[in-house]
Image (spheres, helix red, strand yellow):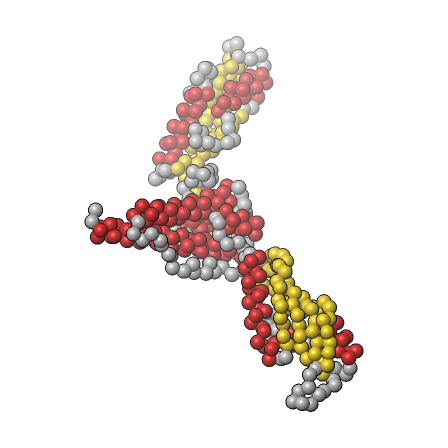
Amino acid sequence: MTDANLAEQIRALHTETIAAIEHRQALAAEARSALIAALRNRLICRPGCEDALATWGLEPLPHRWTVSADAQLSHTRTHAGLGEAREQARFGVPDELRLLEPAMAVYPRHVINVTPAPAENGQPDPRRYHIAVQVTVQTWVTATREAQALRAAAAIVESHLPALADAGLALTGLRWQGAHGPDDVPLDDIGTNGWPEAGAVQLTDADDLPAATAARDAAMQDLAALRRTIRTRAIRALVDDEIGGCYQRTAERVNQFLADLGLAGLPRAHHVTVVADVTLRLLAGTASEACDAARDTMRTATTDSPDQARPWTAYGWTIPEHATVDQDGWRVPWRHEYDMWLRGHATSADATATAEGLVHADLTRALADVDHTSITLTATVEGAGIDLYLDPDRD
């Protein structure tokens, strides 16, 4: 391979890598935004939203944090006397601190000193006192994590320092103690914006073909993993009934959520009910015993847990009064009902034919050693929509 060909191949790999990384960043932002929009519209609950964000490795919901710091507040003010100055230092703070936006609270802890202020322009003023107090500073921020809350609080206080200085107030020696909370932010106050831009993607080993290939593969795998986890968690919410309401309406919302993110839609199926009528010939002493024997016989064809082998629920019944004597036994009419969702059929007729075939095969196996009349099937297509029986790991 020539140097030119190698360089071109590496450039192509870098292009694919950058595209995959940027696609993943965009998908993460869009998924988080869509999920928070669903939360604000009361379509999902807060715990479910928080769990989905954690499962997808996305930024959590913002919370309200109370952030505290120790500091020294120094200022010079006019007072009637030393007693009043000390009282003010112990229990009060200058009014300018109460007018700050964003809000910041300052609580005196102990007085460091209260001394007469130096003369100004050679003219001493016995009513002016310099006050230094140890204080606790508190402010409130909305952030997703404690570290972010601490940075935001520090930025708020720093932004106030010039205005405080203009008012003759000095806040020094700030030592941040931590953030208390978090407290839930009202839903209407949670923005749906995605993450801030991550910036340009930086690649290393620009001239190394194996490294460029590995970086491209890793980026593609990360993108595929996020797509898969988003889809799996969305289907899990639907399967576990985390999202209330009519199944089909809820499923369509989940389907639209996936489609808006560029993911494949949920599998669709025809909902078919098949009723099978058959008469069993059974040896028994009484009609009641014959019906018990019929139930035992049909137990193998009864299920309330659809799976790949039997994608349906099925149950049956008989009425003892309908049983009739038949030579040395009984003839017991039995009705068995199948409820199934079948995928991959273009028309209702195709789904009906498949359903009837499945039911006939299932009953033939169940009645292989049982004397019975021919089986009569009545199939009805109840509708078509998103499959009721979804598997988060496969679908």
